[in-house]
Image (cartoon, rainbow, N blue to C red; front, top):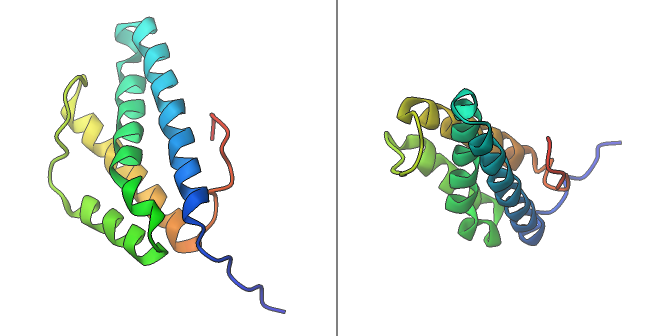
Length: 118
């Protein structure tokens, strides 16, 4: 009665990443309009967009290549980007997003949820 694991669907993962990029851009615009009090939200959305853009190219390959790309990014010390408010907060959010994606990749779940708020 064991359930067979789902096969890796690179196209579904790319669709999920593209939807997260679009949602992150909307979140950044909303945070930018709210001003100083929403700088945390802006950095969090910018981090999610950065991560999704950084791994989109690896999504079309197999699951192992995608996981290797995530591990490579997690091993980096710095994530160069401009236009954010707090570098430490941004890097913390990038690492959190990378860990979330690594867990989703390992279990091969969650890529079918393309809603804006997750």
